[in-house]
Image 1 (cartoon, rainbow, N blue to C red):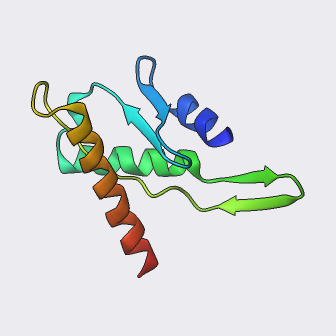
Image 2: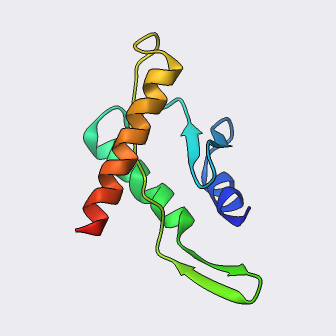
Length: 101
């Protein structure tokens, strides 16, 4: 719940933050500034920073170093929603894979 709250606080009005799976979230936004690589890297870093926190789970404290963030972009009518989610999921797993090595 706290991850979702942190993400919502860090996004702009009009951006959509949704829980997609057990521990996966999707952020949907309209922004031309995220169409290039530099803009997507900036967004990835911002979302990553928003998830870094100390989380209390009952008697356990978890110092979480941040989420694996897969950022993609699309122009209107370029792809359907399921294709975009699939690409974002693949991008996220690439980040996870790199973190393991």
